[in-house]
Image 1 (cartoon, each protein chain N blue to C red):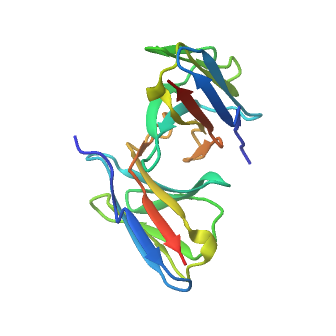
Image 2 (spheres, rainbow over the protein chains, first blue to last red):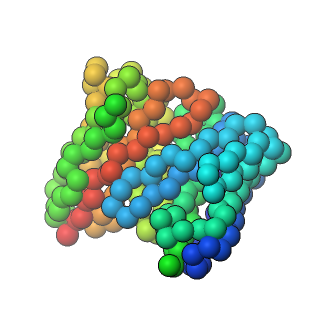
Length: 111
Length: 114
């Protein structure tokens, strides 16, 4: 069974602070996705990382895939209240045909 | 292009009843996956359909079933509802290319079982 562990589970910070969310597994994934979900809505895809060591930037968000393709991190610079939400990582493998999701990190950014 | 559409958005049922949820994927997407989301368990994979065939299945009892039609629209059914089935049921569509793993979710169907 593939498991993805996210940390921290909850994070409450002030506007302007930086933060990092971690996603770890003992399994190797073909690709890893990060999603953001707001209350009452479905998750929205933010990024896909495929290559070990890959770094992708999306405005103030930086995503990194571990060299061994077992872990990933999401770093947010100068967080804003609009960043508030549930951040989910998900790993996919070619043969599984399904994505395994972490339990999520609930981020609250206070103005 | 239009996103993933799920109906109904909200529904309330009582124990023992059954429910059918519907999902229309993004045009051109041939894979539809269903997930159950609860506060305690997170997102749990139910099943995936591709070209009208169930391609993968999660660890849920047989009360949970699904199907996919020739136009890629999908339905899932839960029979003999239990209180623990209360959850947000999410449908996700994708091109079907397993290598990318990218999923595009609908807004979900919120099921409450009383």
